[in-house]
Image 1 (cartoon, one colour):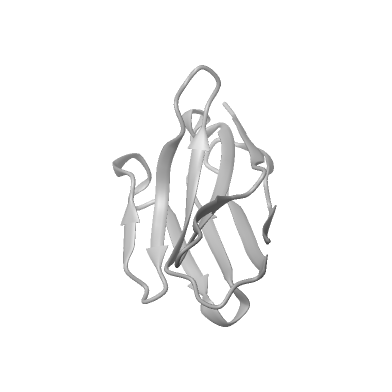
Image 2 (tube, helix red, strand yellow):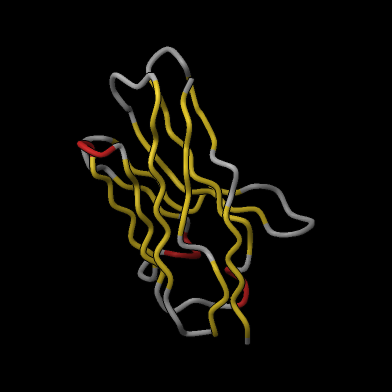
Length: 116
């Protein structure tokens, strides 16, 4: 069993910052990659940022230059620093972990609300 625990969501005014963190625990021997996705009401879940265990990153165009993803391989933790937040960033943010053999596991999600 693999568990993902997310933290750091909340309510912030436009232009503000939030930091999300997610730690994976359980039967984990290695991690291929971790990431953050988001889903706004009435919309499909979309990639926000993704990072491999080697540090290779990928960002959605809408967050480039504002969000920074980082990974701590020793702690199986991924973080997302979100700056210059916009109302359109409002969504439930989900953490993901890509594991050898077991595929992708998901966290329960954390709400991020950006007020205008």
